[in-house]
Length: 85
Image (cartoon, rainbow, N blue to C red; front, side):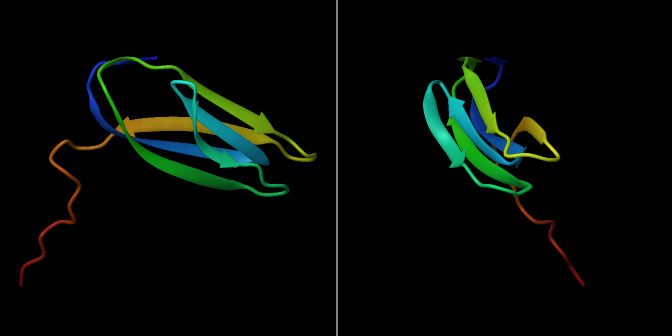
């Protein structure tokens, strides 16, 4: 996968049952759960350019699903809005 911008990226990995996420052949998330439906998240710094993204999934039985998404986070940081009276 080619990332045109370097910076912090948030990866969200939904899975039922277990799953693993590798970035550039490094295991970043491992949640080998059984009979679960959940999303694991990771914020990671990536340089601009090509990176290898690999997701593995394990299914015990019944309903199955998996989804991986990512988005760049603001280089200026994420802040709550200013609330004034």
